[in-house]
Length: 78
Picture (spheres, rainbow, N blue to C red):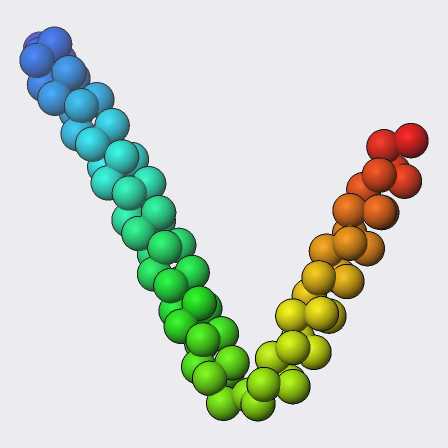
């Protein structure tokens, strides 16, 4: 006679798989947040060593890059 798992056993296995997937998603989200936090911290450390003129130049370059990206997106939309 062949062994067949009960419906409860199959249900528990499905629920365990769902739980494992959810835990994996949450862990991936946590790792992503940690990486983002580390990147932000590194950026702060980089800017803390800059002079006022360097900071102003960086802000202007970032702003110009954003404007260019917006203009490119607008050109693609047309």
